[in-house]
Length: 478
Image (cartoon, rainbow, N blue to C red; front, top):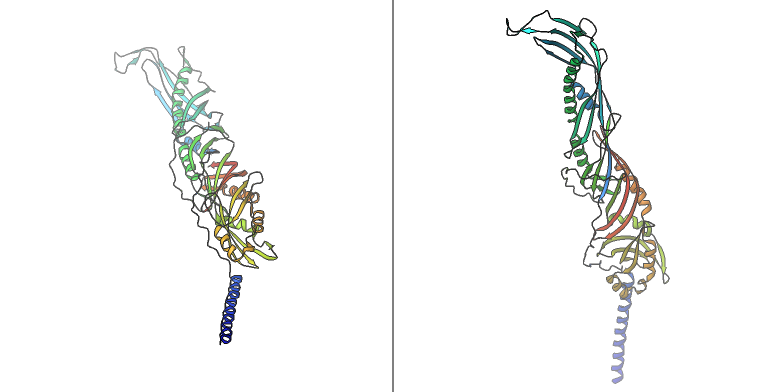
């Protein structure tokens, strides 16, 4: 009986052991085939503090063609003038003046104007008058009469003006026009009873020329520098698309003007802009601000921008993937292939990344890394790459052989973003975006000479990259 019971017990135990053993082998089979899929990192996100960028200064040369203002002044100034003075005793006269088209040109401080005049003069002279027989008076002796430019070719004279210009604080031009030359080419050589009329003629012409001076200053006052600056200011606040990179926002805050210069019928000045420019992969919201009052002008050579660039991890992944995707290596005799890499976020100091892999095993691994910038080589690389805690935990349970520093070393070696080619392309695209017509009569042109990345900060949704850009920018206004 005892023997039979022992046989039955052994039989039961052997069956149980077989089932346990079979179950254990089946479990190992499941573990070996199942993909490794740990949970993604869930650290609390605290973006690092970012220092405020230094103000950037743009010195934008502006040129304004004055031809339209010349035409406006020409049409507003009378082409003929007349006057008279009637006296019973002394000199009485009437005159006619006609001007030729005005020649405009620039000088170092402003504008010069010149024209030729044609004139005629009809006069009489009474040495002595009496009011005895008339309220208007009667000449006691016969009047002396004379004329020039009447029933003969009109006499000629030449005149010149100079206008000095300066910019007022409210963007308007202050002008001061003065007669600089009056040359009577064909003077009226008439002398009546020792009375030389040359000085009288000179005085009358100068009086009439004040009309021209007034009109010139009035027309110069119409040169709308403020609207030009306001238009330029408005356009500089527009978001500028940069193909393949995102959007450039200059964000101007202050405006200033240099001293005006004149040459070849154009006025030149530099528009000084203080700004805080950024480049973002997503189109930023633009909130335009009104044209501020003029600030003190700071001369710079072209533009020197402290450019802040926000690059989302989605946009950076394509660059990182180029350096890692497809890499293969052996870990303890087992082949592993890195199929894809993605930057998925940051915890304020370290970037989180995920790696999809295949080969001896397949699945996904999570890591954290410290992004570093090599300013000299213009290279972003990942330093101190470590397995994420949840990934580490699951590997220790199911595939300890994968918990190997070969992977992290491989990533540290491969996962780099060489900025030189990106910068070259970015310079080209930024230059292209700086050459366009902002409005019908406002043309923006420029180019980027140099671009360097100087700092970076890992944020929740992307890398905040600080760069320095130098170049030239110009506005032409027709």
